[in-house]
Image 1 (cartoon, helix red, strand yellow):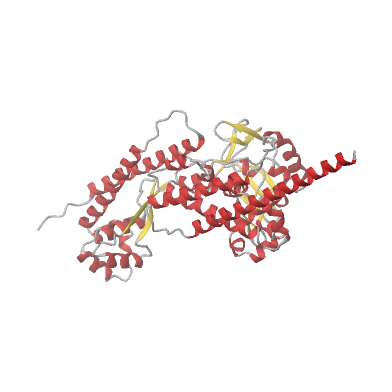
Image 2 (image 1 turned 135 degrees about the vertical axis):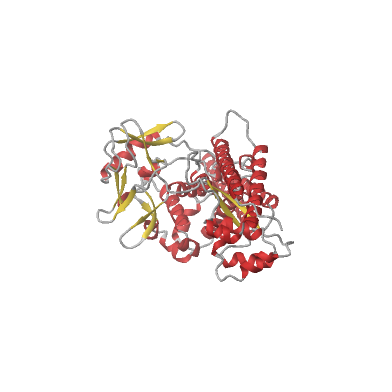
Amino acid sequence: MGRKSSSKQNTKKNSSKEGSKYEQQKRKELAVLVDKLLKLTSIFQATVTPAKSWEHYLEIESLLKQIQNIEAPKTKSETPSRESNIEEFLKWLNENEAQYEGVEIASFKGYDLGLKATKDFKEGSLMLTIPRKVMMSEQDARESILGKFIEVDPLLQNMPNITLALFLLMEKSKPDSFWAPYIAVLPERYSTILYFTPDELAELKPSPVLESSLKLYRSIARQYAYFYMKIHTLDLPVVKNLQDIFTFENYRWAVSTVMTRQNNISLSHADTTAFIPLWDMCNHQHGKITTDFNKELSRGECFALRDFAAGEQLFIFYGARPNSDLFLHNGFVYPDNQYDSLSLCLGISSEDPRRAARRALLARLGLGGAAHYPLYAAAAPVSAELRAFVRIFCMEEEDLTKWSSHNVPSELVSSEPSSAEAVGAALDRKAYNYLMTRCKLLKTLYARSKTEEKELSLHRNNVKLLKECEVRILDGAIKYLQGVIDSLPVEETK
């Protein structure tokens, strides 16, 4: 019996050693890959071509896939659905004095979970009050064990959204976290671009949002690599707690949670970035801002942006943001967005013999030689900055000399009749024709990239909606520009 027992013990010891060696080897492989990722995401130059930018993204994506394969748990534990945790979440809210009479959590087609009215609400009436104590904030992170990490890390000191993401990860790993009932009803995945496949991202072409998406993806990948290195090298108790839970999968989840749910609240002594439980389940609809933080009562208050009947979904207004921003940071597109815009990337060619004069004139207006200029989804879609750029871009030597002598050439920015007269019909016709040609060429590129599939995934459907909105902006701009050109006086030739 003694020999048999000894054999079992030796087997266990050997198994433990092998497991330890495997973990050590895995850590070494992971450290090498993360180091490569940090270097790769740190050397990128913003001036490279779109093709090079895409190649760079694919390299990052390949490294992250390898990292995720190593970090993936051997066995995936089953987690209860969000819906099954709602009862416990509401109980927690009640215990902490949240008020939401006439409001319940419900599932809505195309929205996942949202808030539903169980009674009528008149416009301006109070729907929700959420106490400060249930909000999870950057201030809470600074006052927690994470505060020691924040004190020594410059990135955390200047980026409250990242601080909040790390704090969320830390609290998620604690079964006894005060915010456990709230964390349990958060989505498991998001529709932000951090979850897009390369094929899904490629469908964004020719939208300028592709460039923004690659930039965001690169930034989050770099943050992950940076914090991985910090967490595994710093001698702080808190980073030891983070070592086992800080994976790319967990980090992109935490970052996506912050991007889609963060809110800025004004406390008595300072502003802080925070999650506001229950309130953050409200979906977006056009209207006005009807939420505020009541400093005297130390609570968030949400008022009805319009009349809501019992049975309707309750919406709030996320602010005057274009679809590019909603797509990137919230993972949805709002087709009836009155604040939508399309970013046009324009610049002065290095081969232009008048490059220096044009750039100097642009600089005096506070504009760069190469920049993104918005076209709006509005009756007058051309922004003042864009108008100034195309006018300067189309100037001949004589015009450049004339306008360079002005102290502040503000007429170049304005669309007022007096300013248009000062600029001259000939220059405006040339400028507006140039801009209309650019819009038409861009619209042609969208037509070539049109998605014809009937059954689309959520990601691909969002891409489709975004591009449709951008084409609508181009159509509006073309119509507007043609009207402006037709209204210009015809100058007699000498």
